[in-house]
Structure formats: structure tokens, C-alpha cells
Length: 272
Image 1 (cartoon, rainbow, N blue to C red):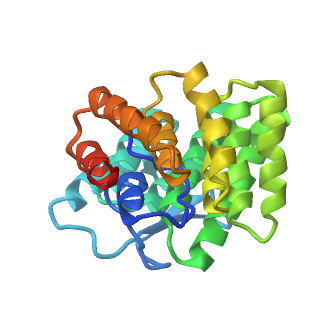
Image 2: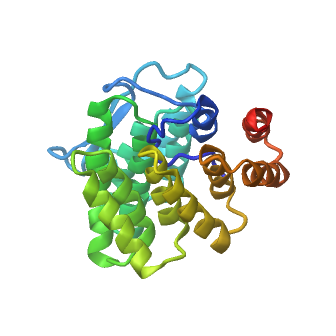
Image 3: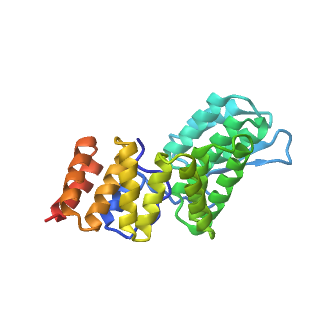
């Protein structure tokens, strides 16, 4: 699993939690770096390249897949080329560029699968953004893409979960909370919604509520590494030392990843 590319809301607990919850590489690209967009005034919507500071060894790969994807100012229906180009940008942490190409492709061919691919790509870029203006812009783009998906599949709970988290980081966070509650009304076992609600409780220092969410989560999804780890953190924060110790030990046995092991050991050393 990826180490939490879901939006990181500061939960106000010790730094080791943030170490665990942050993506492997937190990137804050400048607003104009590596952005790709569609100039809709051109025939076929030619893809314009504003990328900069691309590693020299990576540029040939980008050129290769761009040549396969764009010809004579037209985007070709080559999803393999799209996915490959997106993957190259993602390896150098230029998530905005990957998202823009996905959006260009979706606008050209207008299928629900492509709209969701674009929404997912923007959501990934959104989760890595740090500057407030960039968070806002990418959140808006995520919602724009996902709106196309929900027009055809209004009960898509994965999309609603991601949408909710973009609202949480907006000027209307209650809309996101209500959306998560709606997801849980439809599916009380929904892993993403329980995880997100638990994190939001942690953010507001409501660790008792967070315990309830994470206990429900691991009850339904016993192999959820995130759920088990954050439940252990909440036990620790609520003074349940014995439960915390047992839960942290459980997490150690679940994943040998050095990041996880270090985070757990830091807590175990603090439990008396």
C-alpha cells in the first residue's frame, strides 16, 4: 500500500505520527512548474508544455510518450501512452503534469473511466500540495473532474470519499463531513470513510471519538495498517497504555517497513 497519499490534516500529535502519515516524498512544486494544459482554441486541443526543471535523464522518456500521445496538434486515443506519460511525471513528483494530461485526454474522449482517472490524478496532486492557493486550485479541479463521474454514477462511494476530503480543506469543511456521514449511512463498513472520520476526530483532539471510529474500522477491516496504527495512537493519547502497547505490537507484526517499525518503537519507548 502507499503510505497515505490521502490529504494530511495536521492532527496536533507527536511528530512521529506525521512521519508515518506523510507521503514518502512531500513535494511543493511551484505553481508554474511542469504544468501541462489544453489550449482549447487549437484544433483537437493541443497539449502545451510549460514544464521546467525536468531531470535531463527523464526528458527523453517524456518526449517519447508525448510523441505517441500527441500528433499534429491532436491527442491520439492511446491510453497506454497516457498512463506511461503520467507515470513518468509521477516518478519525478510532478503530479500536476500527470493530472493535466489525464484531464486533456478525458476532455477529448469523454468516458466515465477517463473522467475518474483525471479526478484521481488531481486528487493525488491535491494530497501532495502544501501551498494554500495550490490546495484550493487542485481541490477545485478534482471536484470538476469527479462531477463528471457522479453525473453517471451518483453512488460512487470512492469518489465521494475523495470529494469530501477536498471540501475538508476548503472554506466549507462541514460539507465534507456531511458527505462522509452520507457515505457511512450507505455503507457503515466503508473503510475510507471510517479512516477519514477518525482522522478528523484526531485533528480536533477528540481522541475518544477517534477510538470509536478506528475500533469500528479494524473490526470490519482487521488488516488495515492505517486503522490499526492510528487506533494505537489514539489509545496512547487517551491514556490506555495497556491497549496502546498491545495495539502497537500488533502493528509491528503487520508490517516490516522500517518507517512503520521506527514509528511504533518511538511510541513503545514512551509507554510506561
